[in-house]
Image (cartoon, rainbow, N blue to C red; front, side):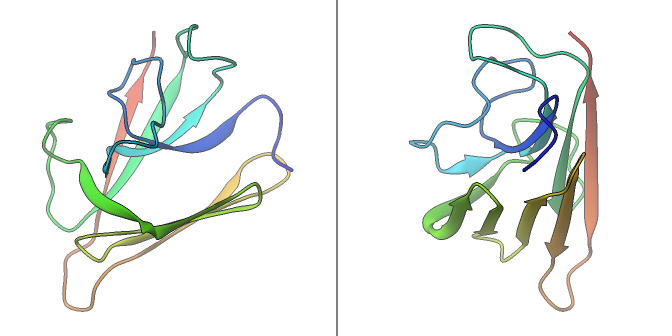
Length: 118
C-alpha cells in the first residue's frame, strides 16, 4: 500500500486539469505524483515524468498513444507499453513508488520532468 498522502498515476489530462486519468482516452501525457483527493479539487505541488525517445517540451506534442490491450492496472502494479514501444511500470513502496522505463533497443532515452504548482 502506498503512502496515503501522495500517489502515482498515469496522466491523460493536461497539467492543472482536475482529471488525471480518463479511461476513454488513448494517450498518456506523463506519470504523475499527486495529492489530489477528488477531481473537483485542483492538485498542488505535482510533478509529471514522461519517458520518450525524442525530447519534446510541448505538453500537447509529447503525449504517447497506447491501447488498453497493452495496459495492466492493479492496486499494486501498473504497466503500459506505448505504440512507440516504450514501456513504463509502476509499483508502490511504503512512502513512494518504484518506476521502471524500458526503451526499444537502439533508441535514445529521455525523461521529461514537468513540475507544477497551483
